[in-house]
Amino acid sequence: MIPEAALALLGERLKDQAWRLSNLYWIVDKDGRARKFEPNWAQAEVFAKLGRRNIDLKVRQLGITTGYCMLWLDSILFSRDLKVGIVAHTKGDAQVIFRDKILYAYDRLPDEIKAAVPVTKRDGGELALENGSGIRVSVSFRSGTPQILHITELGYIASRMPARAEEIKTGALQAVPKDGIVVIESTAKGRAGLFFDLVTEAQKRIAGPYDYALNFLPWWKEPGYQLPDTGTFAQTAEEKQYLDDLEAKVGQRITRDQREWYCRKWRELGDDRFAEYPSTPEEAFRQSTEGAYYGKQMLDAWRSNRITEVPIEPGLPVETWWDIGVNDSTAIWFVQRFGLEVRVVDYYANSGEGLPHYAEYLTKWQEQHGARVGRAIGPHDLRVKEWGGAETRLARAEKLGINFEIAPELSVADGIEAVRNVLPRCVFDETRCAAGIKALESYRKEWDAALGVWKNQPLHDWASDPADSFRYGALSMSKAPAQIGQVSRSAARRVVPVRWK
Image (cartoon, rainbow, N blue to C red; front, side, top):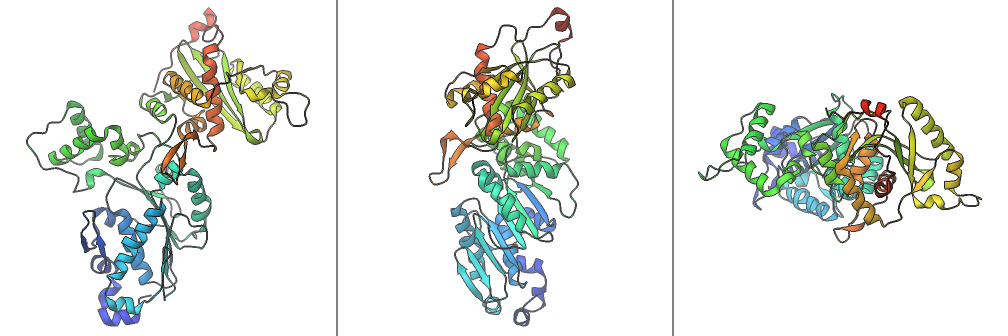
């Protein structure tokens, strides 16, 4: 509803939101200069595509957060009883968004509009208006039912504060009514976490009215990302080939000035350019997750095509790497070795089940794949007796036909280093090991939000058990039996090196 007083004062133009967005609001641009807001190409694109559920995968410094703040401010000024929630990735950013974007623009509105829609509250990160509408900016959104929820830099939140990302998923996102609007905008921060999962899911389907629609904003669309020809710059052969291939892929010419800008970023940032200035959605995640222990090694596995289709070879023995965690949460890797190659052929996890369940699973797995499961590697706490029980898990497992070897009892740091040394020799079956691969990519250090640093200890979350079981297996490799990777002559004739797709 447009306030009648404002209409009388400024006329029919106030009915046109596009006019309002280009004439009413003031911002401070990235060069620190005050200017009247007028949507740039990226802001205009996200406005035009705005639906019920939106994911904007972006490059740096396009002004997307600022653009949305102007849109939300305009919306609450000219609508009754509209509640907008903005979730920022840090408390400092929440303060900046509220003070330097929302309040800055509101305070510079024509006095007639401010008089027509008076403020009832403007502190604590909340701007409330007399028409019942308002905006609240915070690092979380536990209460209330916003009709519009805007989450900034979810990639950062998911990477450094996965517990808060989970809270956003189960709390804030669930509070938005089905016909409300959700906007998630972020740069990429690695191949793990809620933002990566949402982008990946959005890429798999044509979005319906209640599905997340992906909008990708690449560097090569931004007019400011170019440098004038200096006459002294030359592309390398690799840079030229990359940019020539990009031209063919996106169907757009990459100019000489754009090439110089991008090549300089390439030389300055190296592989980090993929996250900061991606050319395609897939390229945006060609960077390891911040703080991830095995991020570089797993990214190398993807790049070298070692995450692919890996057949289970009946002629090779199978060893299993186990962890039995809290509440009987169990993770098992299935591994075959051939020479120095470590073929990670399957992964299984469950919780709330006893050892008989896993013994039965191993029996069925062998029948299904025609391969023999032999050596089992487990943690040292298998030697501990169950509370109130008379025997250890190790003894119970032996009665069920699972003969565990206990992994060397070394420090977690030593185990992490062992995994880093083993991963370059590993090839993973992409389908059967999907959940385990995701866990290895996600296993990371704990983030100290107060100090703004990574702690020198693992974050204990859903990725811990799969990572621990892989760690026990890596620690055990130095004491592997001599027959590992050796088979009979008839079986050996059937064994061939894995052919990568």
